[in-house]
Image (cartoon, rainbow, N blue to C red; front, side, top):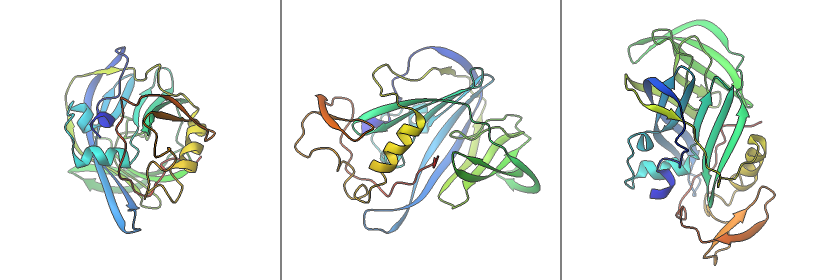
Length: 264
């Protein structure tokens, strides 16, 4: 699993510098291969600049390549590295799905947030509640005007303050801020010419068909021939063919029931 969650091979093109870095706990309520309820969790680092934001794992942010349960969770949870380029109004997401990495480019989605008068103190920050819909999921977010940034974890953003907590209506996905640091880092363009580049909707359909199959939690590589020593290309129509030795990604041995972040 080590190769999976190392920093995604990024093109060294600096597009911004951080004003600060926000750290979140991200959890998913799901089921294991036996159908028992489990909670998967990882830590995320959100690099916030004036032009762009970049959301990745804390392990990648710290350049920590050691094998760990958290590294395995990042694969099980189908974490995406997400670059939001505000100047170009573009969102780039990179995600490993065995045996390949996929890179999508999508226009920046404007979330029609509904602001409320509800307040809550979270981690010592006075927060306000807002609700909005993104890619078919309804979200409740708590944001703080004490940190004047429209940023948020994953692809959530666009409020009059940093998002401190966000949860989907079903209570499956949850992001909670636990720390901010005034650290200066480059925010670089992500992606790689070798990655497959479907549209976001095409990849979403592929994931629904492949990862959403009931076999997936028990057999996370069920769609790859068991006797294959070479990489099997699985295109978005489900066709399989050999493309060469797999030297960049170890075979996943475990997974949980797929819980999509995007429904449309």
